[in-house]
Every structure is written in structure tokens, then in C-alpha cells.
Image (cartoon, rainbow, N blue to C red; front, top):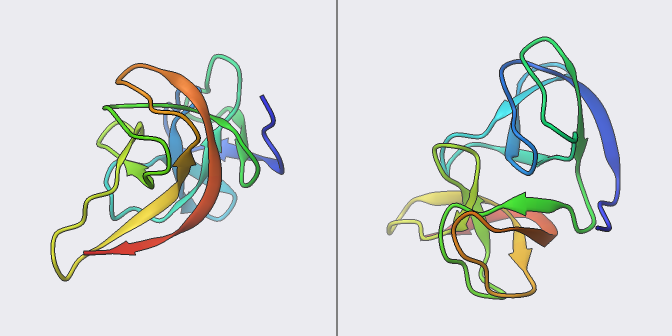
Length: 123
């Protein structure tokens, strides 16, 4: 694992290890729950965190992410309803917030690193 820049925040809800997160308030994060959520990092706290606990969030590098479906190497990923990484596939005229891309093909349930590359993908 080569997580990169990691910062500690307050968990605004339960966050599992390897899940994509977004801000819910200043210095507070929650699991991302949609492809349109403004993803800011990945939970790298072993065992995750409960609401109100401190949690380590990786913002760059190659953090481990849990996948929610098959994603091919090089495909950009976004969040599903559980904060898991899935292939970004925005409909025409909409945007998906992206977290990065895997360097190897992954299946649902896999936990593997992605190259962090926060941004948007337009459909």
C-alpha cells in the first residue's frame, strides 16, 4: 500500500475502510453515496470509523479502495450508493465526480489500490 497524503477528520457517520468519502461539514466526512457526490478521498482507517470518531482520509497517491463492481484497468471510478468504487458512466449532459483509476482489473468486493486523480467525467 502506498497511500500518499493522509489527513485526519471527524466521521459524520459510519465509514468503512476503503470507501470513498465526501465532506458533510467543515473537517467532517461521510461515505460518498452517489456518482455526483464531491469525492475528496478514501478512508484508510483500519477497521473504519463510527460516527463521531476520528478517521484517516487519503487525498492523493495510491490508497486501497473497495470495489462495488467490475472495473477495468485504466477506467475512471466514482462512488456507488455504499461509497465503493465503480466505473464512472455518466449519462449525456451529466457529470460524475471521479476518484481515480485502478492499475489492474478489479471485481466486486476486491480491495486494491487506485491512482488518485480527483476530478469530473462528463457524459
